[in-house]
Length: 266
Image 1 (cartoon, rainbow, N blue to C red):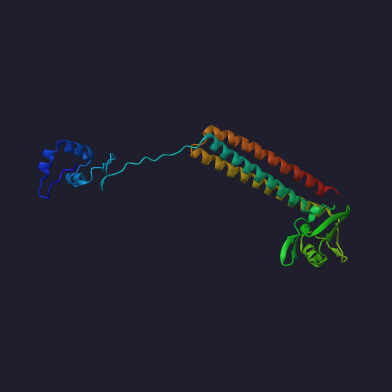
Image 2 (cartoon, rainbow, N blue to C red):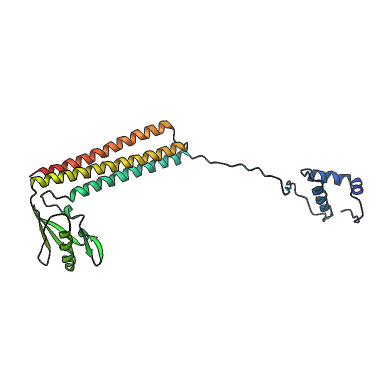
């Protein structure tokens, strides 16, 4: 049962009469350095008997808390996933570069009919620019002509206008049903001019490949700085990247030589 005492009872007399209570109280409050805090906590002895003091140390205002910062290291699986993502991005971008170079080459006429010559023609269709091949069927009646047959005949005028405005150098023949294009033979001078244009486009493709390689190297360097890759790892990856870049450079050279041969063959 809790001891009753009057407000005039001294704290000393309570401690003397209840040595066990004092010992228990001291064990509970010994983490405090302030006597005032200890005396204030002693008032809890007046609470009902069922009340129990927590064993968890109390923290008063002004006490500091020590915190530990935990840093989780990347797993091998996560590092491998990052490497794989870089390699996948490199191959994807290099493939798109090759396709762009090939598309640019195809848009240059060589004296022979090729539907790809019209790939870059855009037509104003109901106020929206669209590719010619999306609104018309393009065929090759013979080796020196192209036939453009629109799915919507009302677009014939717009298609004709787009072809005239392009740099193809061809005059369309609109018969009200379709448009026929005659491919004029290239002069020797024109062939040489086009060969220079193709060579420039090939070099632009190689520059794009080098830029992709540069971006990948930066990504590997970043992983090295983050301690996810060692210096030897980066050297090996850089070597593999150079081999891949050389492989795509050869692809550019191959399609360039093919196009140059077409241009110079009479």
